[in-house]
Image 1 (cartoon, one colour):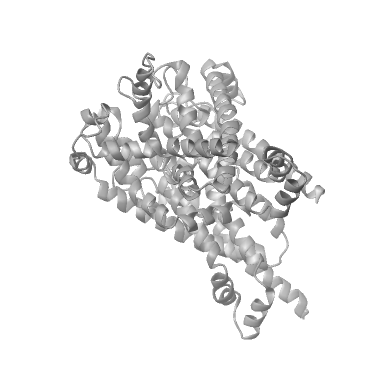
Image 2 (cartoon, chains in turn cyan, blue; image 1 turned 135 degrees about the horizontal axis):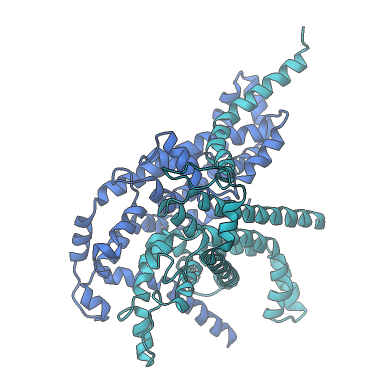
Amino acid sequence: MTDPFTLERRRKAIHGWLLLSPALILLSVFALYPSIATVWTSLWSRGTRRNPSEFVGLENYQYLFDDPTFWLVAWNNFLYAAITIPISIALALSMALWANSKLPVRGFIRTAYFTPTVLPMIAAANLWLFFYTPSFGVLNQIGAIFGAAPVNWLGQPSTSLWAICAVTIWKESGFFMIFYLAALQTIPPDLKEASDIEGASAWTYTRRIVLPLLMPTTLFILVNAMINSVKLIDHLFILTKGGPSDSSKLILYYIWEHAFAYFDRPSAAAMTVLVLALLGAVAAFQFVMLEKRTHYR
Amino acid sequence: MSRKFEAAMAIVLALLWISPLLFACWAAFHNVSDAVNFRLTAPLTLDNFRTAWNGAPWFQYFMNTFLLVTLILIGQFVLCTLAGFAFAQVRFKGRDTVFVLVLLQLFILPEVLIVENYRVAASLGLIDSLLGIGAPYMASAFGIFLMRQAFKSIPKDLDEAARVEGCSTLGVLWRVYVPAARPTYLAYALVSVSTHWNNFLWPLIVTNSDSARPLTVGLSLFGAPENGVDISVISAATVMMIAPLLIGFLIFQRQFVQAFLTAGVK
C-alpha cells in the first residue's frame, strides 16, 4: 500500500497538469511550435512547382545579408527605435510630472494625454493623414501662414520615417505616462517637505529625488518601448506602405511583405528568427536588470 | 513665473495631443472643401457619415469586432484562470520551470510569428474565421501571470476552510479564488478588450472576406486610396469606428487608468 502522503502528492501533480493543459496546448500550438517551425523554414529554399524546396542551411540568411534593402530596413527600424524610445519616455515623464502637479486643469490634461492610447493605430493613422496630406494638410497650411513652402511629408524619403515616428510617439507617450504617474504617487510626501526645509529648488528635488526613485519604472517602460518599436507598424499600412523607395519600411512590415505579398516564406522566416533573437536579448536584458535591482534591496 | 510657464506648456501639449482627434471630429461634420480650407463658419452636415456608412458593411464589422473581443475575453478568462491557479496554489514538480517557459511568450509576440502562425491556422481550418483571429491570443502569458499574482495574494485560510466544507479543487477555485480576484478580472478585461478592439496585423492576414473582418481591417480597406473616398468621409468613418471605445473610455476613465496600472505594474 502506498502511504497517503505520496498519494496526496500524486493527486496534486495530476490536478496541476490538468489545470495547465488547455493553456499549454494552445501555447504550444501558437507560440512554441511556430517558433521552432520558423527556424526550420528559414533553413530551406523557396519551393516552386518545378523545384521542390530543399535544405540549404544558412543560405537564406546569406541572401538577406547581401540584400541592401534588408540593411536599409534594419537601419530604419534602428532609427525608429532610437527616435521614438527616448522622446516618448521623456515626454511621458514630463506629462506625468504635470498631471501629478497641482495645476488647475489637471483632469483635462491627463485625459488629453491618455486618449491616443485607447485609439486603434489604424484610426490614429487616419487622423494624422489629415495633418500630412500634401497641398491641403494641416501642417502645410500652418507652414503657409509663416511663409514656408509646402512639404510632402509622407511622399519624400527625407521626411517619411519622421512622420511615422511622430505618430508612434503621439500614440505611446500617454500610455507610458500612466506608469510614471503610478510611481510618482508612491513617493512619500515627507521627501518633498524635507527638501523644502533644506531649501532645495523644485528642479533639484526632481533631479536628485524623483528621478532616481523612478528608475525601476523607467526600466519597465524601456523594455515595453523596445518591444513596441518592433511591434507598432500598423500605421505604415495607411500612411506610407513603407515607401517612398523603402525609406519608411520597418522590419515587421518587411516580413509581412515577404510572406504575404511576395510569397517568399523562407526569407520572411529568416528575418523572423533574427527578430526573435533580438527580442530574446531584450528579455535577457530585463532579467539581468531585475536581478541587479533585487540585490539593492 | 516658472510655474505659470510650466502650466502653459502642459496645456499646450495637451491641446496638441488631442488636436488630431478634434480636427477629425470637426472635419467629419463638414464637407470636404470647407474642411480643407478651414472655413470655421461653414454649415454642419451629416453627409459624410451617410456616405461612409453606405460605403462598407460597417454593421458586420462592428458585430465581428464585438464577437471577437468577447470570444477572446472568455477564452482568456477560462485558460488564464486555470493556469494561473495551478501556478499559484497547486504544488507539483516542474511547475516553476514551466512557468519560466510560459513567461518567455511575453517576448515571443504573436505579431512576430505571423508567417508560421498563418500556416498553423490554415492547417486547423481557421482561416477567415473569428476563432482563427482569436486563438493565438487566448493562452496569454500576460494573463496567466496576472491571475497567478492575484491568486497568490489570497489568504490560504479561505481555501482550507472551503476544503473542510467538502469543496473539490475546482469548487474552491470557483467559490473562493474567482470571486476574490474580481478587481483583477475587471482590469484584465479592460486591457484585453481595448487591445483586441484595436488589433490589426494578424486579423488582416487571417481574414479574406467581410464575414470575419473586424473594424480595424474594414477601416483600412475603406480608406485605401484606390477607393477614392475623400478625407472628410474617412474622418467620418474613423470617428464612427472609435466612438464606442472613446465614449466608454471617457465614462470609465478612472477604471481604465486603474486597469492599465494594475495590469502593468505587477
